[in-house]
Length: 219
Image (tube, rainbow, N blue to C red; front, side):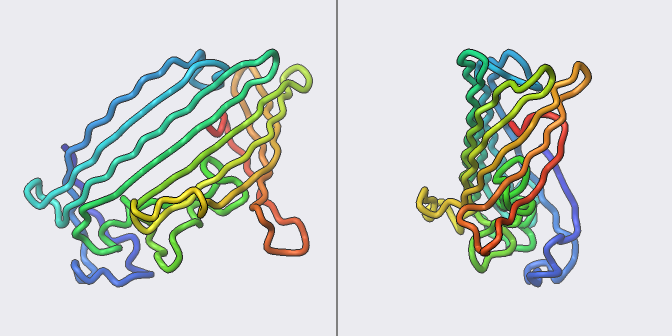
């Protein structure tokens, strides 16, 4: 059980009608299950990881509104010679929501960025006309990881995904796509990640991409 009292973070874009601009209470029951067979948590080369989580909120529990949020995540790693094939999938749904967009903003799905769809700004992808975020999510990632020289590794990646108005609108035809290349500096202390991603198709005559730097693999 969790109880959260917070100011409406989305009030600057959508007026929170239900709360009059005041803080929102969100109370929920949360359950999660995970299974991990990866050979490494930080830089897996074989195995898989799965997690499922369910979050249920209700006025009966002390929440200002009701909702049910489900998030499923799966990753898979397969080593073929010196090359590692890595894939990931995320599916999320948010249903039975009685609150307005401002109240449900922290629960809604937005995507784009260095751990979802590279080539796009962080959480910049939402359903058209719904800046608060969608009530459904689908993100797919694929990487080919290969050695270059000693600590230096290379990566080619393809990301696709979107946030949708609701689960009924989930569709593979409406996915945003990003692709690019990266390098990994796999030191004994940490793995440093540098990626450049490009949205596909390009909306300009000149190639436009985004650079990302982080510690650890993207998934």
